[in-house]
Length: 504
Image: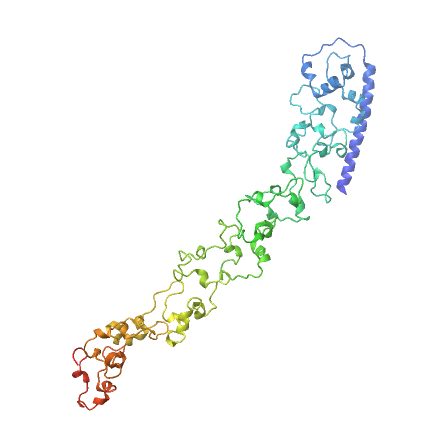
């Protein structure tokens, strides 16, 4: 209320002063004319050639053909500036609305209208005396229409709202669709008359509170630096916005040859929040995929493994060793033929909930089946040391079977030559003759039992594979030679006479 009251008082004072000046100027003119007598001789000053080109003289003398005596008193010997009351003779309408200075005080005509040679005058009113570029406090500087005289748009003798030229009277090619019908639909909604187009009102001044709501993060350095990066200044409709491919034509997209939706940037990116977390974008289509990888520490976002804009079109995911750099390749963790994904599922990477045998059986089904029949070999870790990522050589059989290995003949100490290591039993095709040819064995080894049987060619009849010496006691021999049970009944060993090295 106080401001409104002050404004009313100021305008009332200005009106009173303007009326007073108008009456005074008019009466002065009449008085001046009646007091004029016969004009004395006068000479035109040498400066006339420059003076005549001033905006005031050019308009009055050249354009309107006003005679000098109409303004200059012929009774005066000089061409001094006429009293401003002379101006009201022709300009009564203009003087009724006197232009005021920065303090609100009325100015005389010569403050704006130039009748002297001033080469730097811009326009016929020389408005830039007061309204210079960023020179006067309270008046906007001239930043854009610097080549257009002020009178092109303004008339200082009329109210601004009546005289400011509509922008489209000059800018006829500008078709403004932005903001209608919410705003006034005029250029002034965004532009000040004296600012550069680039200094138009910031889009956020409206779009922080009005639809469409735009986040402050919509623009950022090095990318979408301003709304005008994508939108045309006078037509902000989505149909006229710049297509993403205009700037990102060479940008590769994840699975672009397989997933059509990925080729549409808007499938993943919000136009006004292109840097929003991608996890929500992925979930729109991949809601059935739930990932626990990585299990601890890092963010479980899809883009931590799947680069949305990979360098290679064929790349679907980062290599495991990009993060798990303990290994130099994808096949360096377990065995040369095993990749990480042979054991780990990309979205269920953590295997801590699986039993050891359930994990190993994926690749080692045969071995797991064989060990299930051998209680001592049922745990993979009982023989395979180290970790699944860095296996150490299998434990030696002697770590559990030291007695058998120590008592075995020297040639029988390679357990795997006879035993399948996971089941433990001798292999089906393992026989003594695999290494020992009967025909080349010495002494009684070659003598067949006559007239029937295998004679001494059945090794297990006398030999234990884990014993260094053959069983040569009388009871062992009598198991086959019962017919001579009474032969040398006091002998404890038959091999005392019947040697298997030579002879009979």
